[in-house]
Image (cartoon, rainbow, N blue to C red; front, side):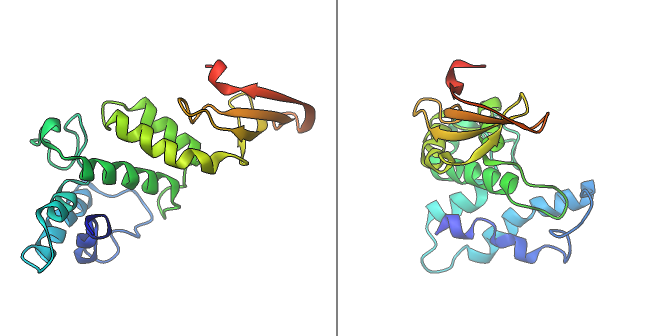
Length: 187
C-alpha cells in the first residue's frame, strides 16, 4: 500500500508544476519536495494506514549518502521498504518520457545505479536488476562503439553486461559479420 501511496502528495502541488516544460526554479523544487509532507498529512490517522506505510511515504526519496529530501536522516535508520521504493522511483523517473526530459534506456538507468553506489543499497539494486534483467534478453542495444547488438542472455552476476550478438555498425550504416560478444569480458 505504501508503494501505491508514496507520491499521493503530488496531487496537492500547485497546478502545472509537474507538467512544466522547463527546468524547475529553486522555489518550485522546494514546493515539489513538500509532496512528501502533504502525502503524509493526507493519510496519517486514516484507518488501515500502518507505520510501515507512513515510513514508505515519508522516506521514499532518501538516499544512503544523506542527499535525499531529509539529509538529517541517517542511512542506518532507514528501513528496507522505502529504499526499495527509492530504487523503483528513480528507475521510473529515468525511463519515463517527461515533458522536461527525454527518457533513458533501461540499460543506461541500470548503469546509473551501479555508478552511484553511495546512493542506493547495493544488495537491493542487485535484486532489482535481477528482476529486470530477463526483460533485456531480445532487446537490441547500441554499444559504446556505435555498433548494434542483440541481447542473447543475461549474466546473473552482472546483468547489465550480457552475452550479445553484434550485427550492425550504426556509425557507418552497414551490417557486420554476426559475432557473439560476452560484455562481461569487456570494460
